[in-house]
Image 1 (cartoon, one colour):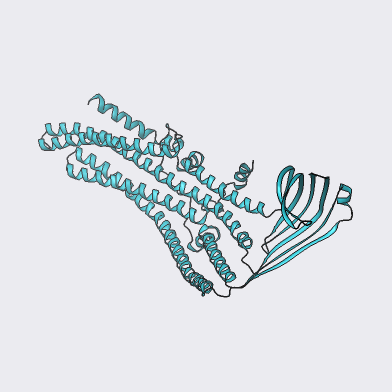
Image 2 (cartoon, one colour; image 1 turned 180 degrees about the vertical axis):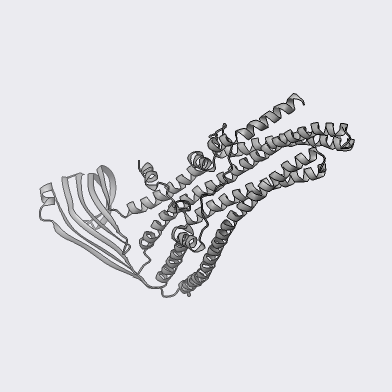
Length: 497
């Protein structure tokens, strides 16, 4: 036997003996999922999207709080010719104006979300000094002024924002949780691609060892004329092809490791090999309970609620535009002026202003009515589409639950098929050595073993993909039966710094 063949057999024996070690210290799916969440760019992008939505919600909440503004113009100098009326000569003329003025004020404003109005309270102080033929200084004070601006019978955007934005924040949280499950799905697929590549590499390595053993046995069988020279050539070809396959599977293993390492941004432990988990930690799922969880936690239903609110808002806007509108403006304050600050502050006078504005659509060629009619038609069509979307979503969920439960049974069957195929292949090898089976029968047993191992890995892969897909839909840890959590408080605190 050549040195190369001996080395390959020794390596195969080492892998077989170390299988228990790999099962203890190998790379698990849970470890890969954790590394993906910690290091992948996709998850960081999803966190930033959540923080962006949270920032929009926080801005809305802050916009409802009172605003306090201080305004000041320390000085304004004016020297110009201004047009004035000369009462003595009954003519228009130009006179030089030279003034120095200053003013300051503070204003507190508050939106009224319930009514859509705006309330403000403020005070103001002004001073003007004339430099002309007579040097005079005047002061004006407004110690207190309250103003109300209130649209009547109009569309109130604050009211709708107050309903929409909390839903947007809740939706952002749920979407972040779903993005974690999307990442889990991606990591799971790449992990099992690596596992499959590693299993195929192990099988190819074992096949090189087996083909070399058969080739050596064939030389003995040829010597005693149990096999023909053409069969000996087939054995040599089988040994050569086994080495070609080994090189291909080794390249496939390298590619699979590279793709997973890209997702983990170079954090894939190079010393660990993936392990096949035969024991599944999740029992079968009840379709009714799964549907109940989805209705409670899935963002799909929040999106449906958002869509309904938007439709109701459109109807409200169209209805308010279709009739008369009014606006009420009212202001009350205290004001006084004088040549000294004492005079400007003493005995303030009442100052009131008020207005009521009305607008009636007399002739608009039914434009507003048609807009309202179209909005109601859109609402009816949208409600039908929403019902269809809900039905399709829930039917698809029930199908996925059934597929998930069926996959658990498939894992048992494919696992048993793999055991039988492995036993059959080893038996065929021994039978071929003593001339009881043909090379074609041995090759067929090898193909069946390869197919059985691939089917078993594929069924386990599909199980975990189905698991994370259902976890994405229910946003519930199906192992611990607890809602998923992304530590939103910590994320928002990071954003508030």
